[in-house]
Image (cartoon, rainbow, N blue to C red; front, side, top):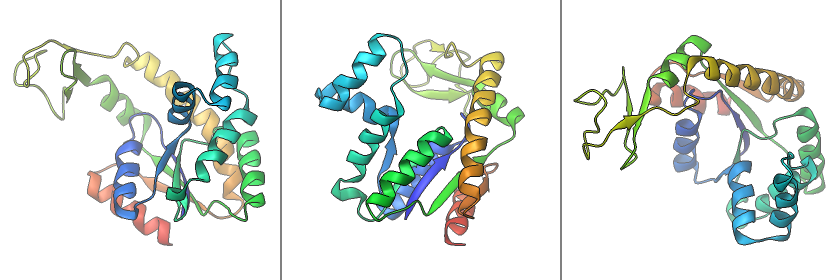
Length: 214
């Protein structure tokens, strides 16, 4: 099954996608990871993208689509894949459809994982991580034994600079602005599935797998 997976920051999209990857043995494809891999490996596409990035410009849709198309041609995508947060615009969705049509393929489902903004803010601003070993914590859901100190190595815990309420709400607004038109574009085909992302991991995953089959 060929999937597109959307979800606001802090909704648990990454966790749910990884659970789906494990269950169905299909790859999760992130355009950010593709871009970094192409740059790291010095591919022709990576070098072209670097020119734009060096100028502080967004990588053009054409290059992004070429990277995605090349990745979808790999053997591990034969039984399906999860496109992680891509396409981000209707123009990218149209370009992706055109590419897939040439390959005799199409997107089967578009999953939108929904969590109320207030809960997203609560989840994100409570996150803390160890500056030394990278262990993750949450002030409410997984608090350290000692305030501000890592249980694993005793180092100081820190908060990401963009994990403030003001910045989180900006990111949520950007997500809603970008995702709504793309979901509407695919919604015309009846393939969008909106999943309630509130609850335990297994509970949400149960809703996800049920929605994919219906």
